[in-house]
Structures are given as C-alpha cells and as structure tokens.
Length: 199
Image 1 (tube, rainbow, N blue to C red):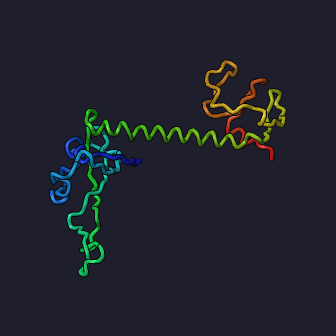
Image 2 (cartoon, helix red, strand yellow):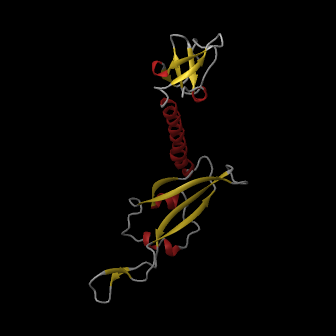
Image 3 (cartoon, helix red, strand yellow):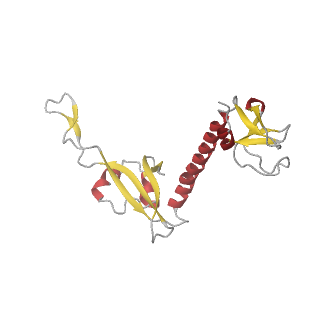
C-alpha cells in the first residue's frame, strides 16, 4: 500500500538519487542559487512492489511532481489580469522505480513510514474487530451448557476482553476478542455469538 512522505529537494537528490534519470530541464528551476533546496519539502508517494531479481525481492515505485519548465504565469495583453500564458500544467508527475539495499537512506525512510503504517493498519483492523463484537453487548444468545442443554444468557452481564490468552481459568485459549463470564468460567467468541443469537 502506498504512503506519502515529505522530503527536501537535496535529500531526494543526494541521498535517494531520485532524479538520476530525469532530464536537467525539469531540475533547472530548483538549482538556482536563491533557491533553498534544504528548506523546500515536496511530497513523494512510495509503494513497495515485489520484483524478481531485485536486491531485496522488492523495488520501490516513487511518484512525485516537479515544476513544469514550460509553465509561465503572467499578465494578459492588456496587463490587467494574471493567467497561465501557454496553457501548460504547473507541475508534471514523474514515476521512478528504485532498487535499494537494507543499509541505504531509502531503506531507513521506508522503515520509518511504510512499516509503521502497516502496524497502524493492523491496529485499526483489531479495533474494527472489537467494535464488531461489542455491538452484541446488549443482546442475548443461546449458550450450550455441559449437559447439552441450552440456556438463554444476556451478554450485557459478561465482560468484553481481548482474549483468554494464557488465563489458567480456561483449559483452551481464544486469541480473538470475546465475552467472558468469569463467575461461571465460560466465554464466547464472535462466531459463536453470530450462530446462536436469540432473534
């Protein structure tokens, strides 16, 4: 999944080697003496893609925009309004494919953002699971007792937990969010609830 980061022009030029295949005319705007290349940040969209034969088995697809040298903004013939004189886009989008090794600045950049974002996505998925099961908090289910009989139980009296883990109270483990009745030492997970809801 792509992620967006901001890098300085100099960092992209000297550390990431992002412009090695870019024609000089697209960089001319950024190479003047009065242009602060360390201070200017621009966005890069980065996506890791599996590629056979690369050093890591993956390459990075980096997408970014540079100012269009053909874009000119000035006054019209009457000199009373501003317009794009040649009807050109102000920026041009470039896509660069980069192979990188684990010790490169690019790998560090990826480690700071790509994998942190992946962890955030996993946490969001976990939160969604908990939200999904929590909606049954005020509902009733049929619960099968040890003698095979089923009783109707109200889940509002049970505790919502992340899982039973290594809890010595239970002879088996549930790694999913579940409702727990600690007084009677029993629990139900999401799938069980869905299959035994009292309509």
